[in-house]
Length: 438
Ligand code: ATP
Image (cartoon, rainbow, N blue to C red; front, side, top):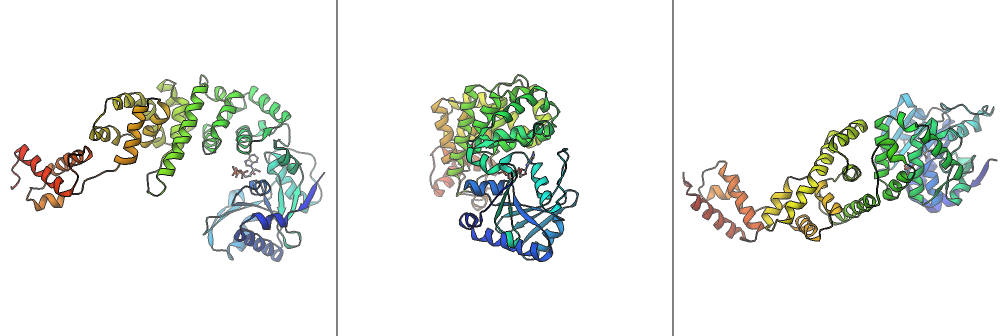
């Protein structure tokens, strides 16, 4: 039931000309050097869906590393090879990544291999993939450039909007596919095909997720966090009982889903606001995990983060966020002066501050945080230690205190110009009665 179609025209229309040029070059090299090369996977799926995906995945029916080396001679970029996997990655200056993989037959027994090596190798490689929509391949060799190969009904499923596995034991063989299925379902607004859904439910029943190493679970959760439709994916995970399978007692209430959506909205707002400024990195996953785990006892949270092997830095932010959200927001309720606001927020991770915005409904508190983020964060003073020296003040730890006092005054609007700052500093030292001309 193989289906093939010429999609050269579609490729010419949808792909940026640079990428198309790269693909032609790859085809020419393959012809010249006797390789057989295909574009595969998400790259082809997204091409047919009309979505941008500039990571090019190639399968080569011979040694991918040798081929990648040949290609890299003609393209400016950085080549990395991974001999144990027989793969290579070429990163072009533009940021485009080209992954080269040797066609593989993998770990799962399947009906007798076809005798025709040429054709069957790519077919076998595609058969070990997760869903039909990811099994599409396009020939890149010159005389067949643009020929779409569809061995497993991927085109039909793409049109129907269906996520379908290729064989019954797919989820048993690789339980991470459960996460991939719901991720693609939300991302493309597709449906998991009926039988595939039964396979998911059955495999969950038999406890396939119990055997999944924490690191892999963490990777899948992070992949979900990065999706635009993450909240829908989490909702679906909960519907299928996946959360309680991986973290007993963890429930994802409607209330939590609303807060999760708030987190995404706030992160989008923050990113928009700070596009120009080189603001510091905000860990989306730290905020999402904080939300998911917030209602759990601290020892449970720690054990979950330990099991997932979450990096220490992110762990710290999550723990701080869960611990501090309440106290921080009640502190903010009674904070009136700008200088106090800064003092209360300055040492708190940005994730925790943004988390309070998502977690709390009190508009007064939120306004204070917005005001801090928009107007006060990073505010300094005009005068420097040099100015203090010029005034004849003896250098020492007192400089720091003095400048901090000026900063507070400035935040609270007591001084506005550099001249006023200097005056304020002089007053400060006079009041302190320090020997400033020592
Ligand atoms: P994305 O847009 O999220 O990158 P993608 O489909 O390109 O989607 P990758 O994770 O980059 O996803 O995987 C590349 C290809 O490798 C997929 O298209 C799929 O065919 C295959 N693949 C990835 N993970 C699995 C898996 N767990 N089991 C089987 N095939 C997989």
